[in-house]
Image 1 (tube, rainbow, N blue to C red):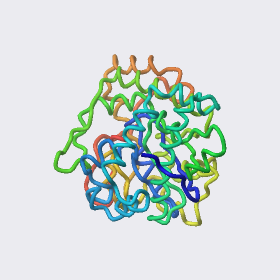
Image 2 (spheres, helix red, strand yellow; image 1 turned 30 degrees about the horizontal axis):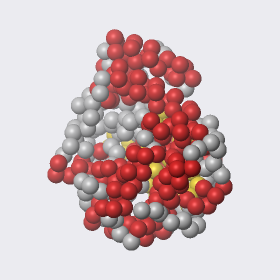
Image 3 (cartoon, rainbow, N blue to C red; image 1 turned 90 degrees about the vertical axis):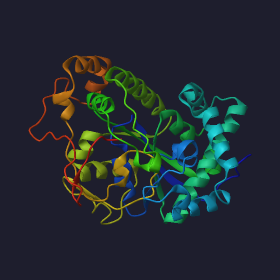
Image 4 (tube, helix red, strand yellow; image 1 turned 90 degrees about the horizontal axis):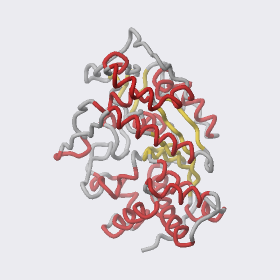
Length: 352
């Protein structure tokens, strides 16, 4: 199976980073800008969303969501097992972590012809989806929070101008980072089920702080490598929560994608108002709507055991200092734990 060439380009903002860093929050905030649409973690479409018929952010099963039905019809004449299997096979062939060296070589203009053809096919397939999302939603910018550096580079690499023409989209990358000690604490806690899994109610993963720190450091090294051949901008989760409007406005300026007048009205100084979207996969916060109070979750600064904190700090020290984090932080008086209440105003918890 081969995917044909695309039509008019759309712009894709790809959110890369480590899990539990707030990517679902950032993706939804950006997707709420007029003329923008967020799709969640699109990389999960062929590997879990479609096979398990998971819930869309709108609350419908993927197979029953009007927008995703329209997207499938526009992109491929409908979602099919052949299409999904081919997407999955292409990801295994070109977009897994082990392929990062080959993708970096491709981005610099050095690639095997067979690999070049696979990457072109991969980009054309996702280009059809991005374009269909733009057409079905009326958006000109699509936000993809798939997070993985290799997957992002496989979609973004353009060794020559013909790649951009063929795939039908331009791409900017945003590297979202969170203090790795907060990330490690979040990963080590039992955080409940994945509501998008529906009746299966699959539990979210937990990993040890040491493993989390090692993986976080490896991923940030990969993000720095990826940032060399393609446009990439770093955003700290802590800045997003503390100053959402200013942080998003600054990011848009760096991206060269200014919002229309009133486009950031959903952002207040310490809160955000979100309506349901059609994002896939990600964190349970995908299904929280209304006015959401944003308060920095620093519970890790109190509750992460001292030995584990020292280990995580040691493993990630170069990035802590480079990204402006305090090596010896103290929890603030406003440190919060679990979200309170289930009404319109809610607190953030357990970033994705």
